[in-house]
Amino acid sequence: MPDQAWQGHDGTGAEADAGARAGAGGAPGADAAARADAGARGAREGTREVAVRVGGLWKRFGEQVAVAGIDLALPAGQFIGLVGPNGAGKTTTLSMITGLLRPDQGRVTVAGRDVWRDPAEVKARIGVLPEGLRLFERLSGRELLAYTGRLRGLPGAEVDKRADQLLDVLDLAGSRDKLVVDYSTGMRKKIGLAAALLHNPEVLFLDEPFEGVDPVSAQTIRDVLVRYTGSGATVVFSSHVMELVESLCDWVAVMAAGRIRAQGTLAEVRGDAASLQSAFLELVGAQARAAGGSLDWLGGGAK
Ligand SMILES: Nc1ncnc2c1ncn2[C@@H]1O[C@H](COP(=O)(O)OP(=O)(O)OP(=O)(O)O)[C@@H](O)[C@H]1O
Image (cartoon, rainbow, N blue to C red; front, side):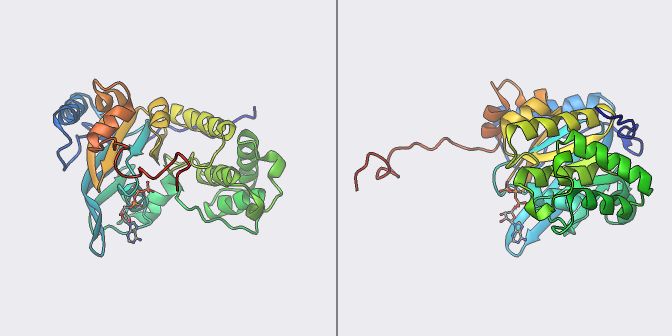
């Protein structure tokens, strides 16, 4: 494996804080509320560095409230999962945190800097793999990284070195000269990840990074991210795949209907539940729908 000494930093810039609070809003049930309280207590007791702080964040699209006044305090140097059902507000939240979508109300700081007052400073310190990633399709993978590196102000020789290492580690070296338009879904995620990592950000935001990615590529991405957080960096990613979040994350925030239902370490959010999946279902108030009654026409070959 090539030398990747550049891919480490000390996570400086994160503000000191007493850690994450339990989520605002909603009444997720007694057990879930107790879990949320436990999370808040645990967080207050320890002193943690906060990589991302969100206060009173709102976003409406017409009548639709996408994000309803959320508070988050995401600890630095951790693998953080933002989980929630479809339409929970995860993408909207990540877009506001990364400076892609202006909030109606509220404040976001990343690495101690205000995202909306100091956007250039924040953008220099973060990497983003957004949903529906748009890439320069007529560049090759290698050219895309060279261009990204120049935009980030990195010296050419350093860009070349990092790009070659990233292409190698992400198993894209054989496709380096292929146009991005001809990349598969998984390859697009990986080249997007490479572009997001190229400038060695303090905090990396990934919206559904494993969606459409085969198990081998998923493992490759995981290895790169685990190595990256191991050096003190922070990863925040959204997902609805609980098993994945459970196996990867140190810290979890559960979102539903625009509100944070719980946040804390994986153990705090899971509580006594058998798995994160069960805790999640309880927190978001989902009921397993009985298959009787409706859909009684489905199956059995009858017309
Ligand atoms: N540009 C937009 N215009 C109107 N409504 C929007 C827009 N973007 C998001 N919404 C609405 O806001 C709510 C939250 O959407 P968001 O995409 O943030 O959810 P999500 O948790 O990322 O969902 P998923 O897991 O399905 O990607 C949804 O009801 C969605 O329809």
